[in-house]
Image 1 (cartoon, helix red, strand yellow):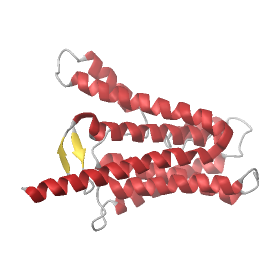
Image 2 (image 1 turned 30 degrees about the vertical axis):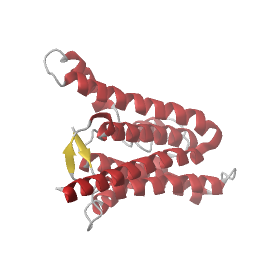
Image 3 (image 1 turned 45 degrees about the vertical axis):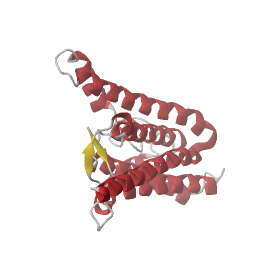
Length: 238
């Protein structure tokens, strides 16, 4: 496992203070965003975007066609978020996790702000679409963040559950299997915790609850900047 600096340069792992906790935090954010979107936006997945294909198929078999358009739009919106994240990660000095985590935090804060502006007016479709777009864009950016940082995928947990199960089965055959299993358990547990917390909050506050994961992402930004400064200081002393 590697530790990430603000410049995106990888260094030796330092245990829980490295990317293991960052990956778990991102998983918690994804769980919160997915659950919040499902509750507040009428049954739409913002992180697990391919899950909307199932919902779309179910809608076609019923009379509930109101959200067909948004469900069709989620995948293109996600792709736009991925493209934006890919571009930001490669422009000039803006490499590594800092700018992507900051961008994601701003997008989630924007979604929460639009929800606050909308208030109890369900007729404000433009603000509704703004919330959906910002949340899905944010998850696209997070997918890129996980990929370029060489972290496990944090938007969905199916692959992580698979790897966790394999690690448990092979714990006596591979020395690193137990540590990998613990990291996988942290990921899945964080996703579940984020989903549970958002489930409690979104039923009362709707998309406004996304201000909480936005704040958590600020921790990633701060930790990455601090790691970069420490790395620069250590390099200057050599």
